[in-house]
Structure formats: structure tokens, C-alpha cells
Length: 318
Image (cartoon, rainbow, N blue to C red):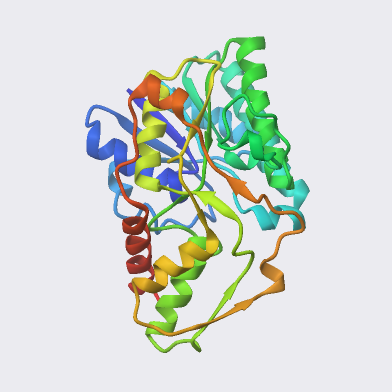
């Protein structure tokens, strides 16, 4: 079997490649990169995977890549995934995420390929929810509250449309927040962990900058998410959409408290206005009954362990 991961150099993509290599020795793993892609997340596996230069914004490069690989499965994880960036650059976000996915689909159609495809959506698609809609089920209305979330809704619905219109073998996922080692420093758990690691080494004053500490999120370890993504194409029904999460939400204040409990630093907390969003989602909490019943998947790594691994990751790098 030949598997293509778009966004293989990223957070989830690199962990998915790790999972496949460790658990499915009969699978050939390929990934798309750009000339400017940072490769630190995959440097330990570069000799075990095939890398092809391709850009989601360039359909010609996608066609060349797909024509050579002829993948049996595609995990489409490549995206602009940082929500705050999407307010500053909404067009770029929409171009990469939504138009880029159209380019991928059209390249597949033009080559008459028939891979099974995962479209990696996001819990941010749910956006504004009423109290009686928590936890979120796949049937919840989608009320996105950021340009990023709108772009992921577009990806989600394009996946449905291309399945119905052209028979592309698409399975959609709505992954809730995930964390763990290699998480980019701009994301909430990682930015807390990096600041703590810098304070431990005396590289910054004992002051941690935060955004909205009241927001609640459902966090899954990225290594559990990688397993779930594999099961998505192993057992997921084409045309369907599945939530992936733990069913437990933590306030950002709880996340910070856990990380501080894993350290011995005494710090002060200061709200940074630049870390506050124009509109924030108060809570994202998953109901994953549909996915669990289909696959038997359950997260194995406790949240505290994920944060410990993340903190240790930054301790090695600051």
C-alpha cells in the first residue's frame, strides 16, 4: 500500500508518519513538501519516507506528484492551521485550505485515480454553540467564528460535494484540539510550555503571557490522533464525517496550572491583548460516539502525560 500525507512536515503529519512506519511495515509512506518547508519534525525518518515537492496552491505540482506516487490512501493534513493568523490573512488561509483542497481533488480526478481520502476538518467548524448543543455531535449546526473555521467548513463541505458529485472516496474528520511534542510554539499548550522552559533556564523573567484563560477545549494527544486518522481510512465509511476527541474539556487556566505543577518555577500571569481573539469559541467538547462505535478507538495517553512530554520537548530546545 502507498500512502500520501500532505503536510507531512507538520505536527500531526509527522506523528502520523511515525505511527504508520511503526505499526504498518508493509506501507510505503510519501509526503508533500515545499522548498521552504522546515524538516525538523521528520529528520529522524527522512530515509524511510519519500518526499515530493508540491504546493496545494499549484495544481500542476500536485498532478506531477500524484502521477508518480499513485497513492492508495491520502491523508490531507496540509493546511494553514493557526486560527489567529486567519484574521490577519483571511485570503491566504482560504486559498491554502479551501482552494488548495479543490486543486488536490481536481488533480486526482484529472489523473483518474481512486485513493481513499481523509479530509482533516476541525472542531472550530462548530464555532458558536448553545448550551444544549454541548457536547458537539456531527449533526450540530456549523457556525464558524473565524476565517480559519470558515475555510475548514468549506473543506468539509467540498469533501461531501466531491464524494456525491464525482464519487471521490472521501472520509471527513473533525478533530478536536490535540497537543504533544512538536506542537508549534504559537499554539496555546506549547506557548505556555515554552515560556515555562525559558523561565526554568533563566532566559526570561518569571512572567507568563496569556490570552483568554476561560475558553475550554477538548485535548487529545497527537499520537492518539494519528492512530485515529489511520482508523478513519481503515474503517471509516466514505461520505461520512466523524468527530475525534476525548469527551473532556479543560479551561486554559487548568492547562496552565497543570504545566506549572510539572515545574518548580514561581510565576506571575499577565494577559496580553494581542493574544485575545476578535471572537472566541467558549467551549469545544466532543461527542465521539459515532467514531468510537465504528472503530473501537479510544485515547490512551492521559492529558497530563501529553503536557509533560510537551514541556520536556521545549526543555530540550530553549
